[in-house]
Length: 122
Image (tube, rainbow, N blue to C red; front, side, top):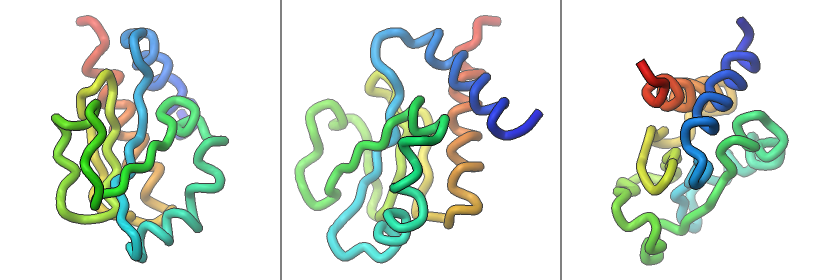
């Protein structure tokens, strides 16, 4: 099964089991972060057009500002960028740093697939 099919199956399972609020990919960033800029160059323009981007839209949060109220229970960590997949206010996985475009989607797909699998009734 190709990456796209696996991602679609995982995302369909995740969305079917969590009807309240969709998952989102929260990117904790700060001004001057070179790896944030690299993500912006490599991934950000195409992310909303991907299966992952439609299932877990990107939300940017400035690490140097107070956390939004709905993320107060999430530890953003010390390093930027840090990407945290949040579903219904709960962290379901994170990517510390930007591993480059070759690895980013693989890591994100694994998080989304694991989240979907953990919500599948036994």
